[in-house]
Image (cartoon, rainbow over the protein chains, first blue to last red):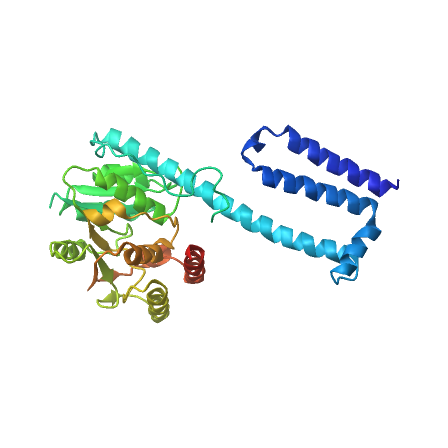
Amino acid sequence: MIIVQLLLVAAFAAVFLYALRSRTAHGVSATKKIAFMTFMLVVLVAVFSPRLVTEVANTVGVGRGTDLVLYLLAVMFCFYVVNDYLRGQEARNQVHKLARRIAVLEAQERYEVTREPAEVPERAAGTHQGADGDR
Amino acid sequence: MRDVAFVVPVYNEASVIGDVIADILKVTPYAVCVNDGSRDGSAAEIVKAGAFLVDHPINMGQGAALQTGIEFARSLPGVNRFVTFDADGQHLVEDAMRMVALLDDDDVDIVLGSRFLGASVGASRAKKALLRAAVAFSNLTSGVRLTDAHNGLRAFNRHVADTIEITAPDMTHASEIVELIARNGYRYREVPVTIHYTEYSRSKGQASVNALNIAVDTLLRKVGRQ
């Protein structure tokens, strides 16, 4: 095994262990977990057999294996950026709703304003967990 | 008029907010000021002037402040009509009350102030041109016909106050409100109002570059909903 292969395998093993240890991953769907593990496997294969990657690249009409890897990475990066942006917006909206509730409740208490007639606040669609893919 | 509440989003306006509140208190006891995380003495000035202070724990933007103010104002006893009013003194309370009176007509839910039907005191030519472009864009994207899309002076009834949900936190909220008018089917009317562009309001007003941000955000919202 050449040194670079050793380092790469060690790095991926570390990421994998780190992901396993995470206690907050329960909400992530099984599909995503399986997709991620498949991706790691593919990467491992690519590390040990660059020729295989080149062959795959040739069959889809790309000259070099490294080019194919670069294209795939670019696509994944774009996906990640958009996903991250949408998640950030969702989180911001939730924080805003929370802060607004605090501000209104606190003001109502200070000015002894009677609360609005008991209403069940309707939940806006898409604010619950697991719906992160629908916007 | 004890059934009218003025909702005023406040962000670092300590030097002028007192006068604005004093003007409002001449016509209604309900001046609701949402302090949007100001770093100057705005909150203290609001309390001193005798307005209702609703205090955002963090800075969330003018759109978010409007929504907060509307939600608080809804719980004030006897309030059925609502006005959104800028904190920098560029609007006139008389204009607002004229708009409120129009709500008595049965066929209107929301009355919007327009700079172009009325007089703009001290606006630069470039500012006027930009605002007209914004209007054309807004009419095109929302289907609501207006002459001024980004005017902070509005008056609306209980139905609108109960159903409006502004989610755009920043300056994009003006376009969002126009979209909500179309989507929720609010019956709207536009009336001329006078805007006082002072040295102060000009320095506080949004940079014209921001128009591009608003346009892009509006288009994205439109595409995202299909």
